[in-house]
Length: 141
Image (cartoon, rainbow, N blue to C red; front, side):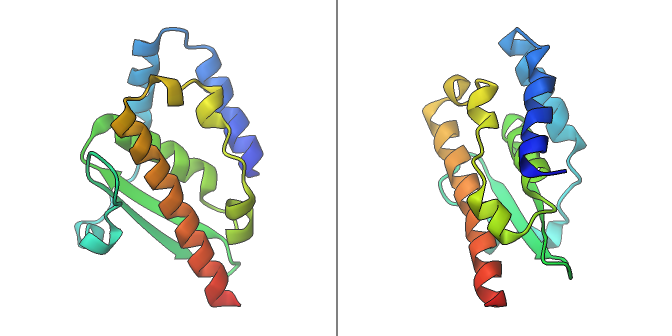
């Protein structure tokens, strides 16, 4: 599935949920489906700077050049948000990740329903995922 198709799928899932309390509950449910990050990967170098809550992010490159992200957070809403980002960006090449227009956040209305500190955290999560992509791209030459 392409990044665009993944975004469309998330947007479609949220289209049927009108109430924002129900949307938050759905985001929490998404976070609960995120595979736990092993404790040995919850290190300071994987902790995302700029998040109000603690968010750890790890990335691995597969032999085919695609990246797989793994993440965890100590906040249930944030864990749901990072789970959506992991879903959309995992399985894609660094170039695809760096070139992606991640509009689903705006499309589902999430950006306007987050507190300023959570919005800053979302930006920090995206920045770190793109930084991983850029680092893996640079390593490949």
